[in-house]
Image 1 (cartoon, one colour):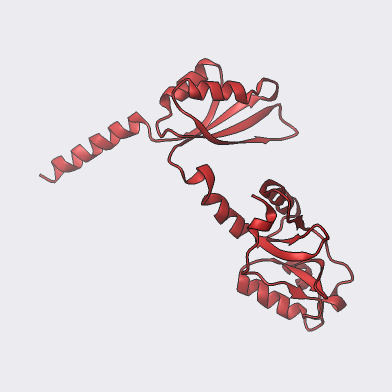
Image 2: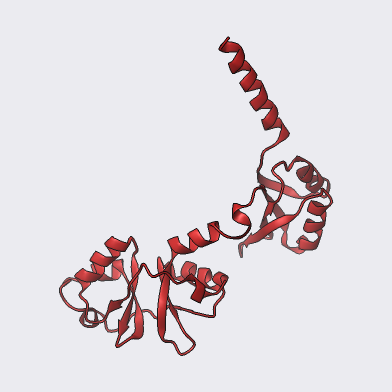
Length: 220
């Protein structure tokens, strides 16, 4: 999914002649802490709530309050992962989207992105989640996939988290089975560390059965 497909019409841009007070009012209305600023249809930069609150005179226009604004943006051709990376790096609630000539074509919000991600792909599909801790030098998605598939299951999606001060990485798997007990045991035989699992196990089913039986007995 490209950035141009992520544009939402809900957030309008500010003009350089708008006041700081108007910018704050719009941020409150649209539940964001950043807004893009345009001048003659061209992207000037992005303004934050905290930047405006640092100024003393809210009645002045933005071009009077600020000589320069950060020009953080995504190109319409950027992949959604690149958009998310830029948002995270700059800690934005809104990111402007420009075309290849750096003309403003719209923007998207963190909330809109999360909604799109949650409603597409494997996230909505039924299944379990498994979190593995793996030494960086031993990481092999081919082996991980082989272990999962040896249990008649498939990986729906995966992502990796790592830090510069650690020699291990965290691999999160979304698997198309709600009972991961067999898969977990197989990973353990291969000396993988299971950090967490989110599943519906046979143990939980048995506990639910026993609880329901007890409740039925007490209601007699």
